[in-house]
Image 1: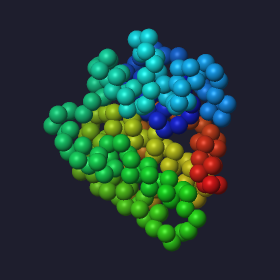
Image 2: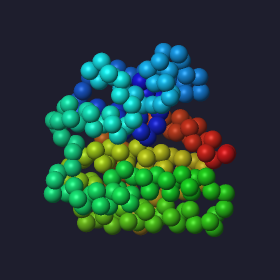
Image 3: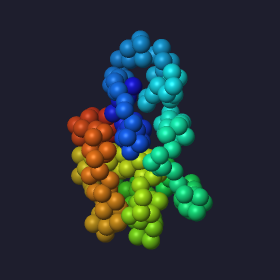
Image 4: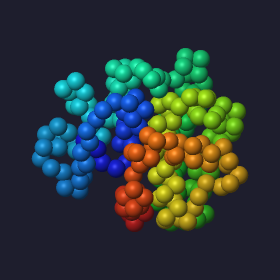
Length: 208
């Protein structure tokens, strides 16, 4: 059961990259049906049924899928794990700082409050990392880290483009190439959210 969102797309991307069959149902979170609340009492998505068990939280779901279906592997090789984990604590592995600074800038009403610069700082660090280690976070092969970060970058691109008339600067060429490459992958195209849905989904953050 899924709704549009970066965490949902992360799960769908994982399933697609693993070439697993699946059925999908969309849920209106503004009007959650009873059958959905029975399997997800807190009303959270995504939630997936694996071996007759309902599993929630994108981190838990993607890890469970990786363990049950290890091929093709999306895991980080041991020789890169410490590097990516170290950078990941800041922004890279989960995209948490890129995502949080994006939200801060999106919600900002003051162009001089530093939120745009905070986002640019995170993206600049990521650009430097890709320059030396790319084209993907894990090097030559796509991994779970990319499938976590890319949907957040897509939401960033659409929401900031619409509400702020903002885009990633051309000077961050490695980030732009990274986004273009992943956004054009078959799995990403197949699971991508409609732009109008992304815009509508972020409207409460902007208006609030």
